[in-house]
Structures are given as structure tokens and as C-alpha cells.
Length: 286
Ligand SMILES: [Fe+2]
Ligand SMILES: [Fe+2]
Image 1: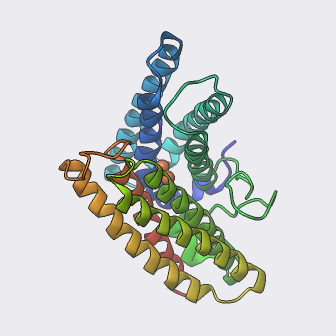
Image 2: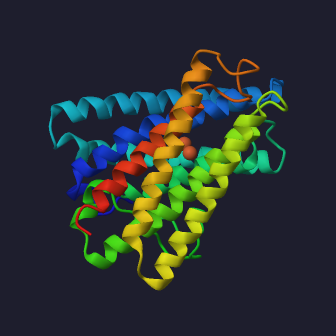
């Protein structure tokens, strides 16, 4: 059931929806476009297609709500949250099916779980059930994640802000480690070795950043430095991602394309930009 957050923070939730609803729809389209071509997969294909179109329709409602004033998002969230929970269940179904080799897809199980984790985080932030750290793939076991819309970060108490920022840095460091891993695994052998090497360097740097965040939490100091280092890493990674966006759109890579969707890098950059903006907002009054 929606909690009171949902009714008191409409603009902050609207901001989250504006960023994440299109991304959540793209996840469904990645799954749709990743299925094998056998008849067994056709039913799943159709369900994913319908769910993606529904998400696009809901996104168009959010865009209209943003233009019409601040009250509309309160009503909208009540409609949207249960549907996003359904979409999360579809993503969990896809992950479990791919992992068990019941569903045949070119998407590896780790990538399917990545998509499910991003959805669970979003649900917690817009007022749905808050996930545990384990469910989001970060250290901390069954501790419930704070899950605060990024526009509300400046208003938190010092302790809450520390926890929220450390959790977000852990989460997005892990997410970007996986983005870099997926990029490296999508390169063509021999002809795209240089790209694979660069992507693997970022994978390692994001893994180290996740562990730095864990250490900052344990010692309860060093957050400001961690934020600055994370922002620098994100800036470098964005520049790398932009070269991939441009090269894939123009088919300018050696070997023409990577073995993945050309628009995947744009998706990754938008998730990165969201995280950078979150860090800037949250670190303003540290
Ligand atoms: Fe995503
Ligand atoms: Fe992602």
C-alpha cells in the first residue's frame, strides 16, 4: 500500500517518475528484443510488448501532469504504483526464467537481475515497499534502504543524509560496474579489443568505488571526498559512454556495431546523469 510519503511529496516523486518511467519501459523493450525466435517465447514477447506500451502510456500521463500543476501527481501515483509493481514482477519472472533456462534470451541473468533491482529501488522511492540492501545488491543484508526521492535529500537530518548518500553511491557504483561489464561483454572479439579493455578498466574502478563507500560507512567519515571521487569517475565514464552513443548511432565502430542494442548506451548515460544530479543535490549542504 502507498505510504504517506506519496501524498506529501508530489513534486519530488514526479521528478523520479519523469526520469525512471521511460527507463523502466526500455527495460521491457530490451527483454522483448532479447527473446529467442521460437514459438514458445511468443507469448512472453506479446506480454512484454503490452507492458512496455502501458508504461509508455503512463509516462505520457506524467508528462501531462507536470504541465498541469502540483495536485495531479498525487492522484497519478495511486494509479501508477500498482502498475509499476506489476512491471517489477514481470522483470522478476524474466530473471528467474532466464536463470533457470526456461526462457531463452540473449540477455544474461545478471543483466535481467540488474533491471529488476533498478525497478525495486524506484518502487521504494515513489512510496511503495522499500527494498532491503540485499535486494538492491549492496552490502548490508536485510537492512531496509532509506529510499528518499533525490529532491528531498537536502531536507534530511545529517545522519539520514549520510546514510542515503552512502547507499546511493553503493547502489550506483555497483550498477555502473555492471554497465561497464555489459559493455565489455558486448564487444566483438579481436576487432573491438580496445573498447573491451577500456570498459573493463571502468568496471574495476566502479567496483573499487563501491568498496570505498562501504569503508566510509563503517568509519563514518570521508563522505565529501568519496562524493568528489565518484563525480570525477562518473564524468570520465560519461565521456566514454558518449563516444559509444555517437559511434553506434553512426555505425562508426570497427566491426560496425557492438553485440548489443545501439540505444543501450543512451539508457546508461541517462541513469548516470540522474545519479550525478542526485549527488550534487545531496552534497550541497554537507
Ligand atoms: Fe536501466
Ligand atoms: Fe542500468
